[in-house]
Every structure is written in structure tokens, then in C-alpha cells.
Amino acid sequence: MEPSRVDYKERIIEIINELPASRLRMALDYVKDLKEEEVSVSIVIPVYNEEGILHSSIVDLRERLKGFDFSYEIIITENGSKDATIPIAEELSDRYSEVRYLNTSEPNYGKALRKGILDSKGEFVICDEIDICDTDFYFRALRELREDKCDMVIGSKALSGARDKRPFFRHLGTLTISFLLRKFLGFNGTDTHGLKAFRKDKLTEVVNSCLVDKDLFASELVIRAQKANLRVIEIPVEVIEKRPPTINLIRRVPNVLKNLIKLFILFKIKA
Image (cartoon, rainbow, N blue to C red):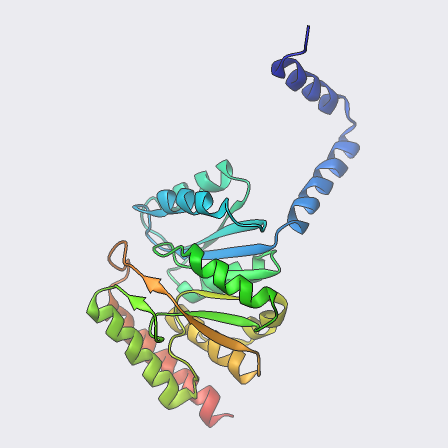
């Protein structure tokens, strides 16, 4: 009579229980290290008050990633949520081995994104948004990076061929910020915020050199990469809004302007 799956499971448990504690720890450390070595792509997703779409977005993203030929980790970087985002993120991390959860104590997009990038284990890092999760961008960006055509890929919502289906006011905000960055900081491109992919070894020093946080951290990251003569390219993306912004856009304006002035001083006056 063939042993059942239950018999095998019980035997495995017996073998584990018979191992000396030191050997068991060595085995667990080896498995952990092996798992980390296998990560090719780290997907970093900052979240704030996203209880409504966090679970479904991560589950859907995992399903769509099954067709890709790379190993990955999804890093949920929560930052100061007041709703049920934290327990949902913890539950996802406990349930799925490829999902990790990081926490920052304050609502700070840039700080959360920086933390996720620096804690990532992949050769390539993708910065995404929970209301986007664009696997088509993943495929196209990773192809450019793997073929060594660039060091960083920006998914632009304003480039020719892009389809920005968000409300007009949000699209206008993207155009306005990009104009100000080009006019005052020497930015060479059409978009800095949203989807990005890059080689971690090329961008780690740039990430560590960034001085502003919150909304303009992503912009400083792109501009510093350009000023460091890294190969930065843009590709058009399609963006569809799944839900209204979790932080009112008008409330973000003072902080954006403050950090814009700070970057102008850093890049233009002190330089």
C-alpha cells in the first residue's frame, strides 16, 4: 500500500523534530539565503489608507505575474495609514512568501519608497502604485534593462503614445510639475512620478544622495540619475484611476512647492 500524503507529512515533521537545534537553525538560514538569492525583481509599492483595494490588487498582481519568467518579491511599504491597511498588509505577508511588508510611522510617500528600494533584494527594482500595478510596463521595462539599453526606465503618462485616463485635474498636475522641473531644475523628460524600473546597483548611491521626501522624492531620484549621467529612458504607459487619491491634491501643493524650492537651492544655487 502506497504511503499517503499525510504519512509523508508526518514523517517530515518527525525528521525535523529529531534535528538538533543548531542543525535546524543552519538549515533554516540556508533556505532563507537561498530564497533571497533567487529574487530577480523587487516590486516596491508604497501604500497609505488603501484598505479598499490593497488585498484585491496584490492578489490580482500575483496572478498576472505567473506568466513571467523571473522570480520576484512584492514589498508593501505602508506609511502612516489610519485605516485597516496595516492588518491587511500583514495578512498578505503572512499568506504569501513572495510578499513582504514594511512600515514607516508617518504619512510620507518618499520615505516609504526609499525604504522599500534600499531593503529590496532583486537585481532589478520596479516602483509601482497600488492603483496601477501595470505588468505590461514590467515586461517592457525589464526587456530594456536586461538588454542593457538603459539603467532606468520611466513609465511616462505624458509622453507621446501614453494614455492618461485619470481626471483632467490630475493630468494637469503631472504636466505642471514636469514643466516646473524642466524650467527650474534642468529635468530632461516628461514625467518623474509613478512607474519606474532600474538596476539596483546603479541607483543605490543615487537613492542615498536624495535629500527631499514625500511627493518630490521620486522627482529628485530621476533628476539625480540624469545628472549622474545614468542612461534614463521613458516609455509611454496607460493609466486608469481605480479610486480617488488617498491624499487631497490641494493639500499636497504647499509641501510640493517647499521641496521644489529646496531642490532649486540644491541644484542651482549651491551647485
